[in-house]
Length: 239
Image (tube, rainbow, N blue to C red):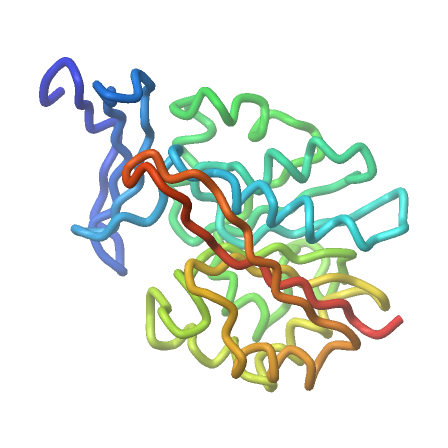
């Protein structure tokens, strides 16, 4: 505890740096804010959940199936996975997360707004490297080569601003083709990005997928008093 308005809830040294979860009371907004940092870099904040929520909504919206098998890459604060579970069509959800501590935060109930995610019988939390899973045997350890209706990804800051250099290969046509091979015909790949729409990445998506669209998601920014935006890419595999 570092004071009444700030608490470090969990932290651990990982292969990619020191990851920490902290809670603070914002004196101006009068809300509790949960933040994740990697070393000195902010990864995510509960102040800005809109685009993470829209990642699930926009990613699942094109699908007509009523029994959806979904993968979320990157657990984080749980907004994308929680929103996916709110869709009654989702019958199974695999969340692929590389850092065991992040999974533990949810199992320990440290994030009250994500309550029920870890305990939902449809949810399976898998500790694995998402990008290695694309290259290897897939997302379900018990069913190699299993295909899914949707893969919703929120790990790197953007296709150009990756957390580790080895992730960059995923955002090329070759990497995206391997991901497309994990989808059912007509399946959807959706990606959150902190950057504006990237023409080069859109070109890679349209080379691999039948359709692709970049959605600019605006949201109020209480820190600036103005509006900020994220991007959600939605690409659909050929039916």
